[in-house]
Every structure is written in C-alpha cells, then in structure tokens.
Image (tube, rainbow, N blue to C red; front, side, top):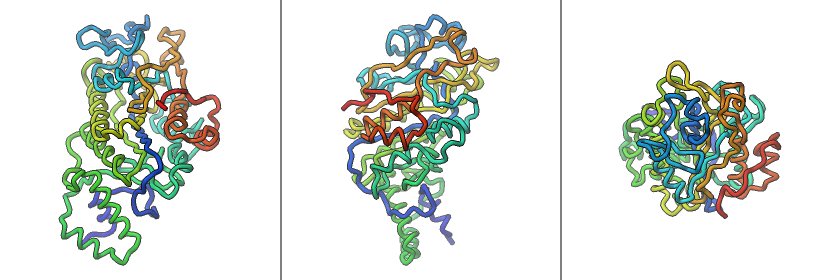
Length: 398
C-alpha cells in the first residue's frame, strides 16, 4: 500500500511548502530567464580566476599556484591580471564571446567562518546573521510572479534563497524504481475525489514529463556521483525553463568545494569540481537553445578561502572570492574588480583576500537590469539595510 508520503517520493517531486495551492506552472509575462547556482563549501576564488600578474601571487600560493597563460596546463587569460582555471574551458569560450564576466574580491557582509551562517547570509540577503528568515530571491518575486509559480528549485529541498511568502515549486529526480502506467492510473483513481492530492499528482506528472524530455521517468533517475548528477539537473533546468508554461527562474546547488586538504592546482579535487561546473553550464546552454540569449546565470558561493596554503596542501575558510555571471544576456568579456592585492598589508586579518565588492551589488544589478524590478523595491524589500552595496551597472545587455 502506498501512503501519501510514498506517492510524493515515487514521482520524485518536492514542493516548496506542504500546502501549496497552485496546480502547476503558468506562463510569465517575461522572456528573461535567471538561474542561480550556489556552490556550497566556499570556493577558492584565487583558483577560479587567478590573479597571475599580481606580484605576490606565486609567492603566497606556493604549490597551489597555477601556471601562467601560455604555459602547459596554464591559466586561460582573461585580461592582463586574471586568468581562468584551465578546467573552465567552456566558460572561457563564453567569456571570449562576451557572454561571461567575473566579479572578483566579492563577498557577502558575513565575516566569520561558519558555512551555515555564511550560506544563510548569502541566501537571505541580510546584513547580519539572524536578521532575515526568508530568501532574497523569494522576496524579489512579489511584483512579477502574480498568480504564477515563477521559480523552481532543482533540489531535494527548497534552499533558503527561495523560501518565503511567494509560492515556488521544486523538483528532484526520483531515487525509487519507476512507476508503471497501471500504478499511475490507480493513484489517479485513488485521489480523484481529493482535490489537493489530485492536483499534486497532476503537478508531479507534469513536472516529470518536462524534466524527462520525452516523459520517461527512467530518464530522470540520478546517475553517477554528485558532479554527474549536477549535469543532469542542469539539463532538466533547461527543460523546465523552456517549457511554454514553465518557470522562468531556477535555483541549483553543487557541493564539495571545502578544499581543506589536497586541493590541487591544474588537477585534483578542485579541478574536477570546476570541470563539473563547466560541463553543467554547457548542458544548460545547449538545452536552452535560443532561450540562452535571454538568460543570466549567477554562480556564487558563501565565502572564499585563505590566500596561503595550509599544512595539508589545501586552503582554509576565508572571506572574499569570485562570482561569475554567464549567459546570452550578460554584458561580458571582462573582469570587474577593485583589486586589493595579495601583499600581506592588503589582506584581511593577514590571511584572507580583502573584499571590495558586496555580492548583493551583483544580485541587485541582475534583478534591476535583467528582471526589470524597480530599484526602490530592490533596496527596501529585497535587500533591506544594504545602502552600502549599490547595484553594479551594465552587467546585462539591454
């Protein structure tokens, strides 16, 4: 016998709240798409986009220093100061096509070293721990969502950034065996007189068909490790975002960035993670097709890592890092940074990259320039107490 909880698990569907009142997605009055990718674990921004021309770079990075552009396995030159990690070749191609940019020496207002608090601040948009309980992206939906479920989290649990008063949905691939047609038919009959669960079942089937492309539930079962599963989720995100009545905003996450030991430089754990991210972005772009031209993808993390290598050939929790915007709607081909330098006198507490750009300035720019939200609303409601973080300009093509 299937109980109601089993029914949800069977179809691989999670919802943003247990009693969401809406049936499915509805068409939004915008062509703009926005995808937020949260890299959980604190990414080493000095490896993602290495400041190879900083006179102190090779000295402070030691064995983690990546060879300069032009050398075997070297960095992919972005400008005269920064180079992209060689495992991010696909992202580099987008950069060369002016569809990607890097914001360096960026951080949230958080200055401690807890992953949990750092991720909360990144996702709730607050100026301090505990100041806000809902997510900044959920608050941003108020003037544009109307009666639609405009956003979807492709995750087992809806992340904080999408939690709040606005109705959203979520989807994740099933970890259970496929349900055959007769089982589905029995469930439909079972819940025919239960309005709530009949709607939930219909939403589940609708979501599964979108995510599976041709409707095969086997297509959406998780395969391989977390990095491979991320690629599959990015493919599914493209299907949702291009569905005629689908959402316009997606949130995904990829963990494994806490490189305390054996981080590596051109190969190793971190390089493998960069490759997974790069592949995922490529899958998303391919799946979106022409919709890519209206898309902005923001890739962010809770904080950076220490400038110096630790005793286990890795890096510890730091402060500033790098963020990436990529997509056909990005005004790219550049690195945005008020670079503080890597000399000891310029480091935060003598150990971290000094933050010079608030990541909320990046989020504000995307919301205002790409999703066309009013600046006053963004300042007052989406990111209260953020006057010290003015929106960056011209990050998006208009």
